[in-house]
Image (cartoon, rainbow, N blue to C red):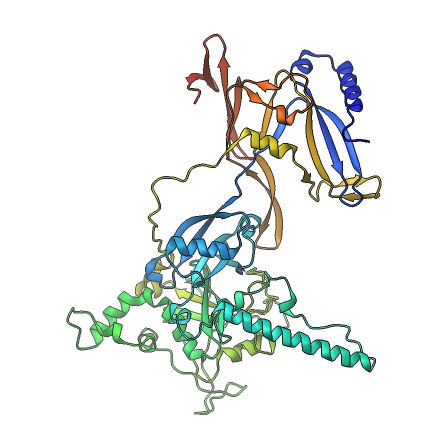
Length: 586
């Protein structure tokens, strides 16, 4: 049928009045015109339906408020919680720029990650859309600063430089692949499968070229726990002490150097203890009375904090010491302030037949990192997959109980008895308040007319509301447009503030939740003119406001109040349960 034809609408309206004779219908009911359009064959479907109220979508500004936690590399500085406002079309790169401007930090001097609770969820590359903050509502944005020594040193090659070099390498590889295909086709060979080439995937599927750092740098998740020994047994339990950290280490590090590098990150926790310990055991102090702790290297400070930890000798596969011929003994860790462990990537169930790639034992509950110079981090990476790898946290979707993964991770377990005596664990979650502007940002306001504009515009139905096209004989995501044909004498408007949204929990579980739009709607108290939205009305659709019903709360709970105009007293009144009070029209 023709969308512009009114004959059917007139017949439908009078038929409806015949079947529904009521003063409510006469005063408060009107008529819609709904048009559905198939995106494939462009077939139209027109229907005419009565209404008792108009449900208006709430028009919002195209801005996004993003909450984040900035984590400096130096633990003494403390974390900072703040917000930035960007356009809804913004990318993570735009968010980086906004954060850098607000906190006066380097734009690319940090890694952007999502945390679910305290555990790592996913890494955010700079080309990804900021819409991800809406999709992963249960996760929080943490911005963790890269070690300034690496970011400001020769290890930083620059994101653009690395991008340029890798794109050139990808072009050469593609040209070589085409040449090989041509040669194979000449002799009748066909390649049925090719290895995955990351450079040909979507532009947002990358790790920001390792944040511009060299290939020797490896981004590693560092989980932090506190150990609690059982009173009457040799066992212990552990619980998370703080949120996961993302740190950079060098693949060329020996495991001994890895110990020192991790200690360097946590060194601020032990500063008071080290100052006191060195002051009691050494002679000669600086003029201000402080000890020589600040003059010692990290390796020297590490040796004072871990005096029992000695270099492990090279051993044979049966555990025999190559230097002395005696069996190797594991270090006693009960006197250590903390333990550094590898995270076992394999399943740890009773029936598991897979050995830990680091220690070779079954059911390994995260083995200790050996204190040795005979092995490097690169050797450990080779143990994980049989070849050198770098962690690509874009593709890895983290679950702490999912051991079918091949990422290199570390775990730090602090000793609850010795640790609290030697360190200040409060620094791990130290918060530094940011001096925000005292004046709160102005609340977003839109006009009621913008809501009507959004109401009459074309919209595409979502996948849960498909329309069966009689021409195409299939369900499609049709385009829909609403039009107001007849307005009643008394018009009721309903603002659609509640909306069901898809929510991804820990990157793999899709749920639905109710969201509320708190945008302030401005509307006139008199002469609301709907002429542009009711083009075929015989009487000018002008309305005066006489009552408002308010809801406070969310989808799960709330409270209703009302405002109403008293014609006799010429004033507005608020109705809140049994309480009635006069109100200013403003």
